[in-house]
Every structure is written in structure tokens, then in C-alpha cells.
Length: 477
Image (cartoon, rainbow, N blue to C red):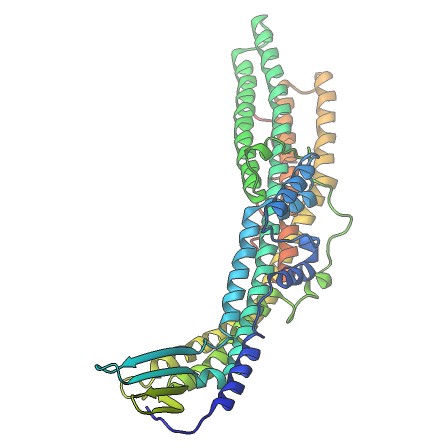
């Protein structure tokens, strides 16, 4: 400790004033972050992403959710409902606020330390009053670098919120698609089961009057059993898909009773998205590339700070002492400098850790750049294949199966084919229509995944195996 008689009040005051001004610059505004997300992901949020913090705001959002639930939920209204109702999305915003605020905090210097000391001699004749205020000199000198790290952290929080919201909205779109497709399949399976029930009843009656053999009646009954099992399976899958949608929307028990879904999926668009339109978002505007770049910049700047602070730390303080004795008083003031000596720890492990972190961030950034276009091409392939398959079912397979069924009915009425041929054709037509519904479902799933991938949030997109068109199937013998 070094104490001098020279007052340095003015320089310290300037330092404190500078510190106060600079420390106030590192601020994270969650509303600005939400606005940034609404602007960057406008096709996902429609500008309706908000954080409800008061009871009034929450009540308004509940009212908006009730209004949306009053009508059958379309794909777009499902997204709007999730935005105003889902606690998961609200949690994402709150977590982003926490992350951004913590990042902003790293851009500020610690508060100065003030101490006050009063000493009295045994005979109470001498009193010492000592005041001391100190702050970290390196914290002040490195403040611009720390602010740079904080800004990268806040940018990362904003981009991550946007990426998470895109993923959540995509999950809502896909859950809605699965729920509506499952409902459509249940409706068709119920029609098939009703037809099979009538057919089985007819078989029993024909057998009772001797026009059907036991074998023929049993084959009719097997078709009815298959249709019944198919209906049970599709009903369970519909429940699973509906519950998945309920979770994505964040509905409570009162709201789920109001949930109404449309009877069928939307028609396919007239034209698919062209490859050039899908790949034009490649580059630095992708969310995954932005996040990787912000992580790299933040690690590089933090490494620069660590390279300095890992060797030593410097504290500067101003001390003022007033000694009062029985005959005279004396005031002393001066400054104090404390330097941490790197005797036992040279900080090499901290520097190695930061070097490794920067190296990893650099390689992750390079990997993101290399994987971005590949991931988008794969997602687009799933989208385009799903579009072509669904179009093929709509334009070729279903019309052909309908034509074949109509011809088989005419031949059956003319006694040119038997009931087994007609039964086999009915099964094939049923399989084709259910495959057409599943193809439409896969297209809308792939469409949602492609929209997210174009923003830089790759999502799972695959093309399932479709049932064969059944043109060469034999007649069930």
C-alpha cells in the first residue's frame, strides 16, 4: 500500500464520471429484440410476437385466443393462436431477455468499492477516520473491448430468439398438418368401415339363403375386420396428432374443448417454389450463419480480454484519512494501487481455454457455412418430391383408381367378374386414397420445413414410402 499527500480527487472524479457514462451504454431492450424478430421473421410471426408481462396483457391475449378458437383453425390461424397463447413461446422470449441482459451485464465494469473506517485509541484521545474508494483499472481500460463482447452476446440472443421462434412456428404448422390429415383419414376410414359392414352383412344374408359359400362369406368378413382395425388405428393416430397440436398451441382444458379443425388439408399450390427462390436466402442473412458468426466474434474478443487479465489485475483507489488527537488534527489523502502478482498462476490455462473456444467457434462457423447450402438442397428435394408425389396421386392415381372401380362395378353388375374381384378392387382403391391423403400431408410438412430452412433453421424433412398405385394387383385370390 502506498500513501501520498497529493490529492487526486479531480482525476478520480473524472474517472468515475467516465465510468458511469460508459457503463450505461451496455443495455439490452427486450422490446427491441422482439421487434427485430418480428421484422426478420415476418412470414412466421406476422408481426404479432409479444411478451405479456402484466395481468392486463395476459387477459388480452386470452381474449384473442378465444376469438381465434371460435372458428375452425386454419394453418395460419393456428400460428397466430400459438403466438398469443403458447407459454412455450412466452418462455422463449423470457429466456432470450435473460440471456441478452446477462450479455449486456458483461459489458459493464464492476461498481467501485467504498469503505469507511473509524479507529479510537484506548484512552479515547485519538480518533482516526478513514475513507477509501477503489475500482478496477483494467476494467476501465478494457471497457471498449468488454462492450464489444457484450454487443456480440446481445446479437446472439436476438438471433437465437428468432431462430427458436421460427422452429416453434414450424412445429405448429407441422402439428396442424398432421392433426388435419389424421382427421381426414379417420373420416375416410369410417366410410370404408361402413361399406365393409354393409358388405359383410350382405355376405351373411347370401350365405343364409345358400347363395354364398362359407369361404365367400368369410372373405367378406375379413374385409370388415381389416376395415375395423384400420379405423381403430387411425382414430388413435388422430388422437396422438391432435394432442401434439394442443401442446404446440399451449391450450388449456377450457380451450381444447373449443378446438375445431377443418375437414381436409388445403389444396396443393398451383406451382411449387422454384430452386432459385429457395436458395436466394443463402449467405450471411441466414440465422444459423449469423449465430455462428456472432459466436466467433464474441469468442475472439473475449480472448483478447483474457490475454490481458490472465496475467495480472490492477486496482486503483483513493484514500482519505483524518486523525484527531488531543492537541491537533491531521488530514492525509492519497491514492493506492494494488497489482496482482502472477507468482502461482500465470493464467496459461485460462488463455488455453479461450484459444480453444475461439478455435472451436471458428470451425463451427466454417462448418455452418459449408452445411447451409447442402441442408437447404436436401430440404428442397424433400419439398419438391413431396409436391410431385402428391400431384401424381391427385392427377393420376386417384382418377385412374376411380375409373377402374367404376368399370369393375359395371362388370360386376353384368356378371363379368365375381365378388372377389370387386372386393380386391375396393381394397386397392381404399389404399390409394389413403396414400393420397398421406402424400398431401407430407407435402405440407415439407413445405413448413422448407420455409424454416430458407430462414436458416434446418428442420427435419423426409419423404415417406408411398403405397404402390396397385395397377397390376391381382384380384385377391
